[in-house]
Image (cartoon, rainbow, N blue to C red; front, side, top):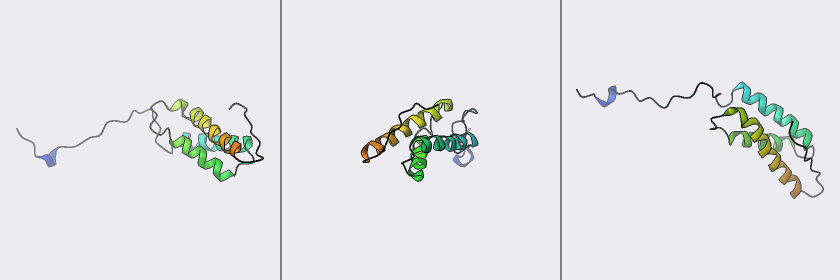
Length: 100
């Protein structure tokens, strides 16, 4: 028996049910809270820069299978970028407190 190619249904790999979709409510809450913490930790950095840094860091983990660690990893990456930006800017103070 031969199947006509038009009758074959192509199905992609199934997504595990425990992965939130990109931009899920959990992701948005984590990003918002992270931006608030980092704006307080780096008050001399422009708010737009802090938010863009957090979003870029968070987006870099978009394919992570274990989502539980994404917020802490993204915050550590963001802090590193912001700390580096403060070091490169004259007269900037750096707050090296650990993330809560």
